[in-house]
Length: 169
Image 1 (cartoon, one colour):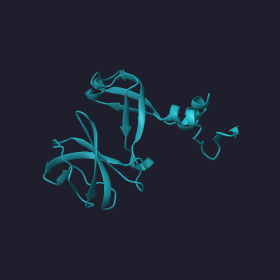
Image 2 (cartoon, helix red, strand yellow):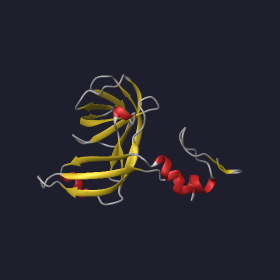
Image 3 (cartoon, helix red, strand yellow):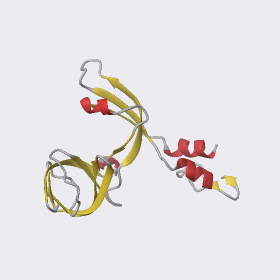
Image 4 (cartoon, helix red, strand yellow):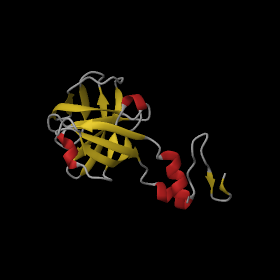
């Protein structure tokens, strides 16, 4: 019951978007990260080139120059490294993974936020274009069962609070 109450408080955000053929690589219940600057979930972009410690970005980001966590997906999972963004088109990082042109990345920190984990709940072909997929997903917290078992979660200002000594408050 605690995990259901927790999920009802935090797993309340859903998204729907369209995606070209990359949708073929997704299955129901897959999880993925979404970076969205307006929601304070970090920022994302694509890489033009990576030589040594210099990563050239395809587009200028709308965040100030500074230190961020740079994350890229590799064949073995996500790789995160500290980097410096110059406020223009360049990121400096000692990341060892060799990134290819057009590879997506995201930058995050406590100011601009961190990407959120979503679980795919529906995927379908667009009716008017068989090259486009419609994706529906809901935000998820993979630690919800652990938090519920230990009674360590709280809801928002209008949500529930669980205290291990008194139960639901």
